[in-house]
Amino acid sequence: MGKGKTYLVSGSSRGVGLALVKELLSKPDNRTVFAAARSPQKSEELQKLAEEHKDRLHIVTFDVTSGGSAKEAAAQVEKIVGGKGLDVLINNAGTSEDLVPPLDTPDEKLKLTFMTNAVGPIIAYKYFKSLLDKGETKMIINFASNYGSITLASEPLRDSSKATPLDHTQIAYKASKAAVNMETVIIAEDTKEAGFTVISLHPGVVDTDMGSRPQEIVDSAKPEISPEDTAKAQVELYDRLTKKDTGKFFGYKGDILPW
View 1: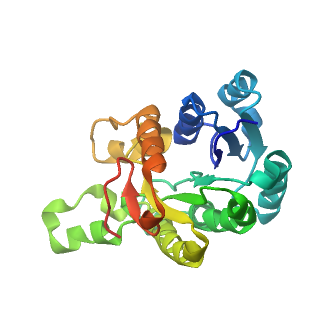
View 2 (view 1 turned 180 degrees about the horizontal axis):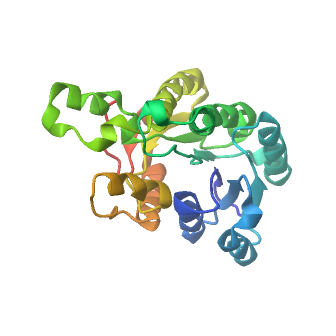
């Protein structure tokens, strides 16, 4: 295990999560990364990384919708970090329903989206909190979205010129990300005296499977932000966060976003 900070990244088998794992491993300060995913064995790229960074990258099976899976994942991490604990928990895992109006969204997809996006970070907090208590940094990054900002979502109600076809789609995704923001505030308050830094993060509209679909609806160009670009900016942001930033909602470049 490396002598630097320890990180766990959920949803790390592809997209932004995988890019974050790569970016953290690229740093010269010997960071240790736990790459967590529901089915990590299906990611050839992640498996290759693990071969290249045997001492610093550890693959963990973690289904964020399952408390049992979280308990097993935390036990696996604890065996490796021991008393050093975990420094940074990055709750990146997420999903979205199809780009359809609320009445056309299947019930099971609504449930899965909320379980993954909104319940997942709470489960991770419950089972990794004791490891974070032992860590030096004590940081939690909850992936939210600008689509979860109620202030921004309500703008078309006040100004119809700002309306787009996306306003009437993805109700579960948007509502679940708004829930993440509430979770951030509550957990930040819950851990403030213990010296934690807990933030919500909008990673940008990234050129991934999930990030590109909304652009197709509004007939727009694909997102200009690559997973690598947002990962680089995010890690730079994490490195400069302080305890004074706890409970805030950040864009990936460090700008403050409205709730």
